[in-house]
Image (cartoon, rainbow, N blue to C red; front, side, top):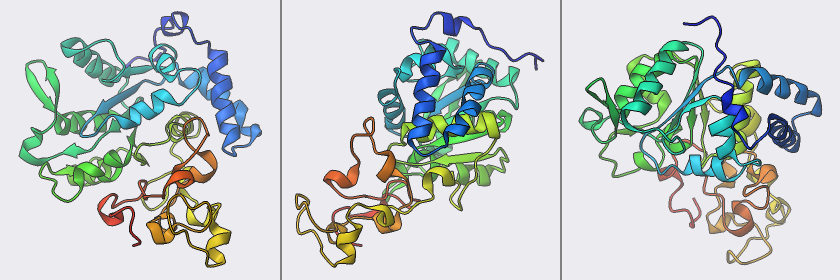
Amino acid sequence: MKDEQVLPEEQQTKSGVSRRSFLKAVTGTAAGIGISQVFNPALIQALETGLKRHPVLWIQGQGCTGCSVSLLNNVEPAIADVLLKVISLQYHPTVMAAEGATAMENLFAIAKEYKGRFSLVVEGAIPTAADGKYCIIGDYHHKEYSMVDLVKELAPMAGSVLAIGTCATYGGIPAAEGNVTGATGVMDFFKAESIKTPVVNIPGCPSHPDWIVLSILHLLEKGIPELDDDGRPTLFFGENIHDNCPRLAMYDEGEMSKTLSDPNGCRMDLGCKGPDTYADCYKRKWNGGLNWCVDNAVCIGCVQPGFPDEFSPFYEPA
């Protein structure tokens, strides 16, 4: 391992996004979700020191890439520029230009050079059936690497692991009834393989981009955030949806919606899973803070372990 971990600064000089604009966007997001302005200097310090020194390797298993799309579409300045040119994201199958042997060589080179000092992001479930043959990542030194192989080799070398999205955290849709691939989430996989690297679960179908970016910042500046019993940061997943729903007063009055288009009433009788769901969607919202599921439909409990089977059918009361 090298004593100096600084990665090439040309990442930034070639960027159309200045560090200042990125800092402004992220600190603004932090303030918007209720993190005190007093905390902002810490975020800035983390970005100025940690992001250029802390490599992130992002690998994708059994999923739809929706969490990457969510992240890429919802942060200003454009997160694609940030991930490619500002921070030290060294491997991401969706956005990187490299492919094949070149990409795999870089993946393992970074893992070995920064052993114990990089973060591994896992998106998608890990299919364990058929010796992992349901998800082949690539070829390295004439060895075929499945998602199982890759996680088993890289995770013990990482300083921390972030499981992004409900597929990576708890198995999600790939692990639902009918699953023949042996799909499983990161924590269960680690238990089976006796991997001890700390895991932060950031569920959601997809995960909110704020949850991802700010969890990485917390890792850089303060280490592993406080986690609940399901391995999720309490900062984002400590509040009940139903208790904070704008229709709660109508529920207390016994006023229930008859249809999804009904502007009045609680939607619990239409299948809303808010009472069983813990996340701060109600105040963070999605699509740049414009709306969230309860505005137009019902909460389907996508951040909870057991999703989707334990929350289906979505539009019938539990």
